[in-house]
Amino acid sequence: MSRTKKKPLQKQWPFYIMMIPGLVYLLINNYGPMLGMFIAFKKVDYGLGIFKSPWVGFENFKYLFKTDAAFIMTRNTILYNLVFIVLGTVLGIAVGIMLSELRKKAETKFFQTVILLPYLLSWVICAYIGYAFLSKDTGLINNFLNSLGLEAVDWYNDPGKWTVILVLVNIWKGIGYTSIIYMSTIIGIDKSLYEAARVDGASKWQEIKLITLPCLKSTIIMLTIMNIGRIFYSDFGLFYQIPLNSGTLYPTTQTIDTYVYRALMQQNQIGMSAAAGLYQSIVGFIMVLAANTIVRKLSPDDAMF
Image (cartoon, rainbow, N blue to C red; front, side):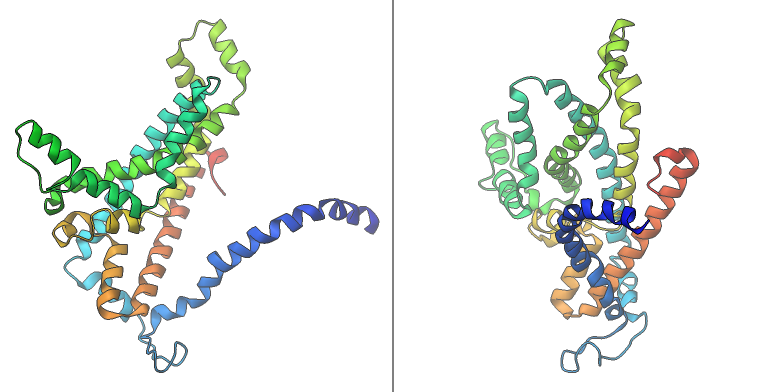
């Protein structure tokens, strides 16, 4: 009996070895930092060290809510993420379907490379690209407006326009990665379903509506739940580097992450940073559980757990 149990393990040991780097990375980067959660409840004194620093209870959490910017940064963080989720999903599906339709043509690989390129760029590079377009004196857009006899726009001193700019930049940078995920799912759909639909005289839109979209439901739900879990987080590079940390734009670009960073630069309190991270993690965990619970009630087969 014991020999029969050992044989599968002996056959699978190469796979367990292959898992080791991923498991080590997961433990160090995802579970290791959890040991430092107690820092959120301390006022760290570098002279005393982390462990001997005094406990302050929930004082580090209060600074997130007692400031006048609390409502603004929370509103911006949530609303931007909601827009990113909706537009990112819709456009990701649309581009994924387009790529799947072009996958048999020679230009598909070139198009995939082009659409993934923004995702591979850092936000620092994107910030320089943005400045090249938006600079009041030398920006390409203002040069074009001047050539038409129109007045130049001072983009970095006009908060109202940055709601649209940030959404467009985020979509531009993330659409490639998202669309590839959806395209991979579409490629795995049984081809006989499409063949049967064509025999019945279905149009291309009917194939997408009745076959492609229903088959993408599980992938859409999974990605949406994962994104909901990060709804209290914001992409620091997008909201800090792209606007070039312009104080005039804070009403539009201020999020929880950028506020914490600026507070740390002024007060040098890592306890506050730890408190913000713990707060975001707890809220994200609750959001994932809530979203998954709703999905499990509506469509049990599509729930993550």
